[in-house]
Length: 87
Image 1 (cartoon, rainbow, N blue to C red):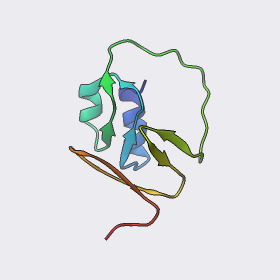
Image 2: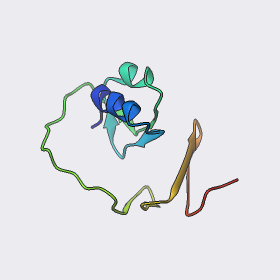
Image 3: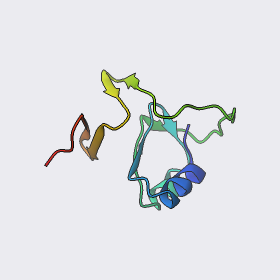
Image 4: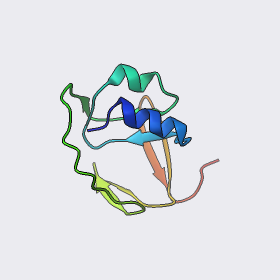
């Protein structure tokens, strides 16, 4: 679950976007940030913060593999992942 606070941090760190294999909350707050967001749904409930996480790992969901240093392109219709920058 990703919410408005993380969207603010993402904007401050110049992230272009966030892809969530789950829900987001605070969707209005998130939409106000200059960060693209793709998620499965919204949910008003708060998550339980565990302070856990990993960086620079390969993950796979929705039959797509997301690897460090790959390029991700997204618009209203979907997401494309490429090993090299697309021109």
